[in-house]
Image (cartoon, rainbow, N blue to C red):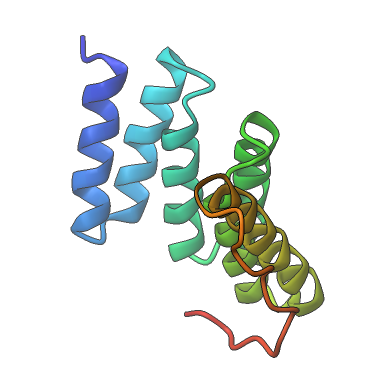
Length: 126
């Protein structure tokens, strides 16, 4: 029987081959063994988004955010998925949250870091 890491790595391999549905099967197998593995949940959300299943992708990336609320990358992904769904104001809000979280991390290394710029026009990410 394969362990969670093996399923995750196989899922990544399949994703890299644009076999998104097959990668999701592997990610689900990994999550059966390790339900709150954030990297796997995030990878599955990305595969779902690639398949056009934005509602599922958004639901899963929101789960990532619940588990890791200071993860700027998760908010960036949420912004992309919302853009793909046509929810531009919500996508801008998620992008602003990602910028703010990134700035807070930068402040730890560089206390004089300027604040992030305000929201600007968004271009839909494909």
